Image (cartoon, rainbow, N blue to C red; front, side, top):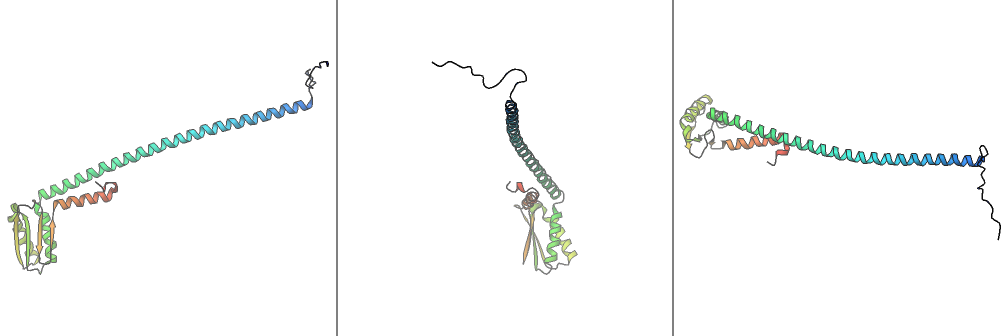
Length: 195
């Protein structure tokens, strides 16, 4: 059997007797360890930063969606208020001066139908006398020489009416006014167009 020999690893561990090649290897190992640690730290930081950025993006999307919903709600409320106010004003004006719209319409019709043989005005039956007086006065002012007929009809809402002549006509209708108000509001608030 062979005699055992001590394995000394080729290094003298006494103070100051290290080999030069061993110090270079230690320095290289340290540099590699520092580089790997730095790389791992950077990768972890980038991963955390990426996760935080994704979380921030999701939060921003939620906030934008909430703000969009809030703005849509405010627009809806503004549109509702605009419609209510416009209808109230229009209705109050018609209630206060139901023949004002008729007067304007008759003036407009007389300018177009001055030579017509007749002019028929249809109003609610409760407004016949006032409408006759108004139409006669306006026809004299505009030089209308045709025949004037004012008819009262129970199915026409007070404030509404129709004016007819041989070649045309004109309708005054609160429901139509209400529809026009809705259309005007839908123009300002497009999201409301389907309501």
